[in-house]
Image (tube, rainbow, N blue to C red):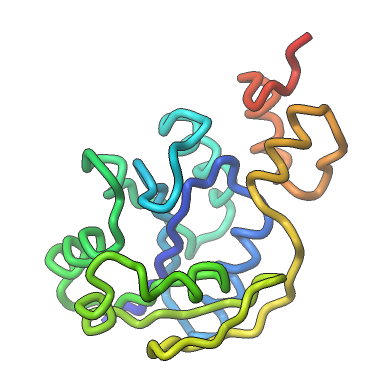
Length: 191
């Protein structure tokens, strides 16, 4: 049985915070792999700012040098909102001998009572929560916590910095930054 961590999100763009969370949880929970699953349409956000194709390409670049990091496009193939329950239900059917751990930040821990079919979801998956500045990790749901080094970083902040042509060195991998520059994403590189 493989132990697989799931890290979902828009990854718009994927940054070092995503990689740090994935690696810290992989090591702490002795997971065999981490599957990065980009959302199609996240249920808690209005929309993504970048196409699924660009987000997938950037994510492939961000994780390409880690042998345990994989990209799974299961949510991009499905139309409509990307509910975690639907994704996990499908994954457990496709990979019945694997054990899944769903990684969430502190902001999502607080939001768990509002998740789609949460009571059924907690029966088929183990949640792993990681701290995020400004959010509590207290919950009545069975969440395993992993203490990780925290940095105050978000894709929203990076998009805003790119739009303003501000410094982002070390916050994105060099290959992702090169992709952003080449495709003039987030307004970066435009006159």
